[in-house]
Length: 225
Image 1: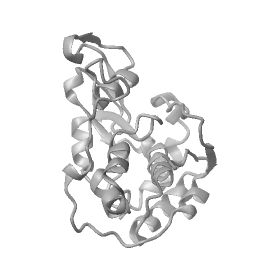
Image 2 (image 1 turned 60 degrees about the vertical axis):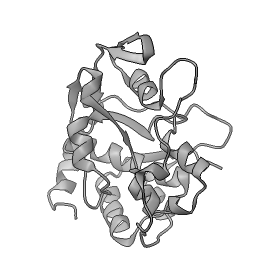
Image 3 (image 1 turned 45 degrees about the vertical axis):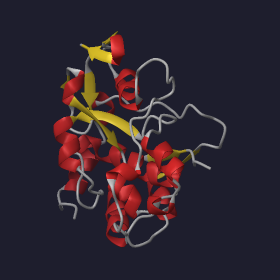
């Protein structure tokens, strides 16, 4: 569960977070409504259900497909790296990326080259499966795993941070950079609301505690039909 000092540390970090990491862009696809609500209200809106891992295989989610432009050789992972680069890399034949620089907000680190980054599913594939994606069609799972329509579903972060997170939810793992906590919890909650995913009781309690520690934080999400 959340360590007792995390809430106080978050309160202090809120004073400086805007100076530490870039904020995400707004959703680009306006075909469905976009909602912005306080984090506490967003957490309360999460449906609650026990997690079920039965039958999970990572291959159940076809991830890193051809992306927005199937002819340019850049898969979803590469498109995320290109969109999030602070200093853009050179794109070589076959969409090989050379140079560039990225901000890994989970651990407040500048990262280069591209090979030192992972593209994290904000809500990991296994967690999504446990939280309702096991009942989806293969096409919907593929859409989830390659969600480029909002900038918070897929996040370029250091490989070390991503692998530390693995498939854990916020009751089990939070970004090592304390100043990133409120942003992370907002994006986690927004992703679950976007895709209609559930939260289990332990996760929900952790999110409620974190929302109390992030009183000025909002959640922006756009539900997927």
